[in-house]
Length: 135
Image (cartoon, rainbow, N blue to C red; front, side, top):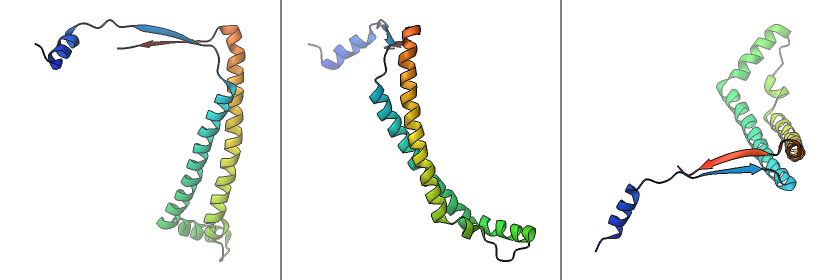
């Protein structure tokens, strides 16, 4: 009587034949591409807003805005100029949110156009051939 572990050990010692599968991508569903590009663009938009917020906080905490204020006061000879008043955290965050919304719209449209162009080009090229193996 052999145990299950011994059977598995004997089975793993046999050479395994490598199988290859070649698949051809001949169609991309339009609505799936639109939904996926919308989700990716939304995620990137959220990242953009968070990064803009964090960069502003880091610049404010390290005192770089104060150094820029001093430099611009010397150059412009305006004693009351402040970068943080001109570019406040709220203004930077709102601007980043507006850019993120525009990126979502443009990214979704580009995903839809890419799917449409691929589906049209498949008629000429026959599609994309992809090979897979189990090694």
